[in-house]
Length: 474
Image 1 (cartoon, one colour):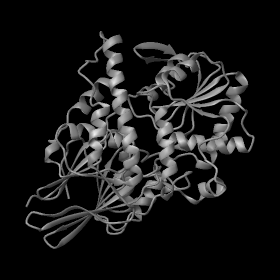
Image 2 (tube, rainbow, N blue to C red):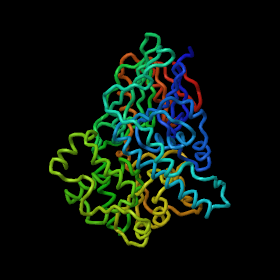
Image 3 (spheres, rainbow, N blue to C red):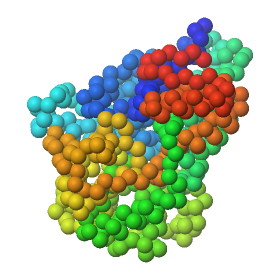
Image 4 (spheres, rainbow, N blue to C red):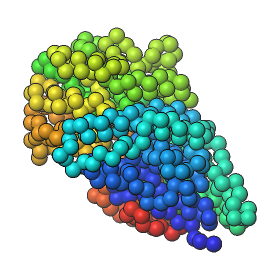
């Protein structure tokens, strides 16, 4: 029988495109199947072409509903995959709206590029998938509870191999999960852990990450493997200061934020600030129909909440994501009308890395006004528009194939990060009993290598940093 091994098809020495294939005997299992983000032409080529046959895959285990983890499942289905997609119930509900929105964006982006950018390097070959494709793939999704074992491959290879899995709280976004795989092979039990995107303790709304139980091998994210975050308790204060200062100038605060989790976190903190009368009474516009749908899903999954949100809001039957200053837009006309509306005001729109959606239009219109502030509240991957905007060495930025000067104030609040930092990661891994091998994924090399060195020194385990399509024996 072929030895168990792992092949990273994405998020290998990079942050996006999470997709890891596990081989156990004749069985093949994917951990996540996400979109690549970054340089548009390169990302489009990676996204369009799987480096494996979708029909060879037996099952998909989905950690959470961010697009760099779930975003290629419609394409997987489109190319013949018909196995189950296991995830938490919250992730299943979120994926339904996230994927349909992604199909819509890809349809509209293709239409725009073919019409306006015919002379660019971008080829108009049709969207990666459509809204219809996104809806079709949802029949594969199977909801699972946190903390309960479920079968992935009940029996295979003449009954000699059995694979089951369990989801644990990842503390990253609502519904996010760490994965524990238990593989029974010829009477021997192997345990493999997948951190997925590990969150931080004391984040608002959701529960803290669970400790990983004893496993022999851990596939671990390393987004901030060599960086410490600001204390999460400072985030609300910094948000308040940015709002007060920009409002005093009569400017707009433009916040690129993922419609899933980060938008709800910021609205939650804005609600706290308004209740405490620490921010002025200025309009807060959530310019994202997707964010509105996601917020509705948040309210349907209290099983994911921490105690704080109950104490602050739910015990008083208050909606934490709605108050007098907040307005959620729906139509394109409402979004366009914001361009001519004078400040002060807050506009929050997706995507968080500025690669798609309405945020690019707001940036195009507002980045050249020194009264305004562009505020980052999350990670910006390499080669994304967001990374270029927040690169202090660049004074101009290309948006929709035109250059715009960065005259607005550019501010970043690192404390909002939903990823574990170096101290969180070190503590998480070093506490795992029976660990022999760590495979680092989902990180840039400059974050991975110092993390790997610390783990070898502190934990005395083998640490590997595979490239895309490298085969890692277990």
